[in-house]
Image (tube, rainbow, N blue to C red; front, side, top):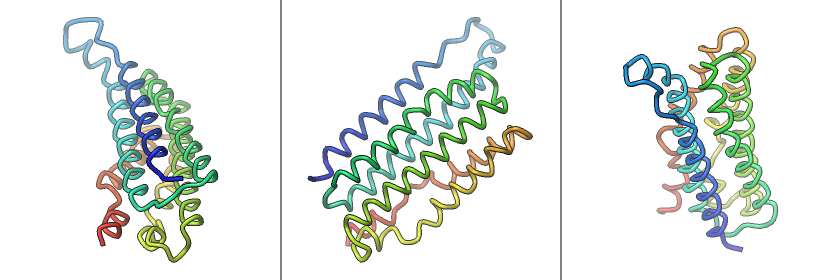
Length: 191
C-alpha cells in the first residue's frame, strides 16, 4: 500500500481540527476595545494550537515524503496520532475560555504529550517497516528534539497546577523549537 491515501486522510483530519478550532472563536459582544481584549485568552490559545497543528501537518508531510509503503501497523499508528490531534480543539477552547487556569492548561499539556508520543510511535513504526538502514531511518537520526519536546510537556503538566503561566511558556517554547520544519527527511529525499 502506498502512502498517498494516508497523507490525504491525515491532511483532511488536521484541516477539520483547525476548522473546528476557528469555529470556537466568537465575535466580541461589544464594540469597544475592552470586549475585544476579553477574547484575548481564547484567541491566544487558538494561535498556539494553530501553530501546533501546523507543525504536525508540516512534519507529517515531510515524514511521508520518504515513506515508500505503509502497512496496517502504520495505519493504526497514524490514527493514534490523529486521535490526539483531534482533541486539540477541545483543550484549546477549554484553556482559552478559562483564561489558562490550572486544570485546562494541564489537560492541554497531556494532549500535547500524548500527541508527541504518538508521533514518535508513528516514526518508529515507519522505521521498523522500512528498516534501520533505510534512507528514512538515516534521515531521522536519534530524534533528540522529539524526545526533548515530550520531556518538556511532562514537566509542564504538573507545573500547570502551581504556575500555569510557566507551563504555557514551556508549550510556547516547544512550538518555537518546531516552527522550522524538520528538514532531515526532506534533505535525504532530495539526494
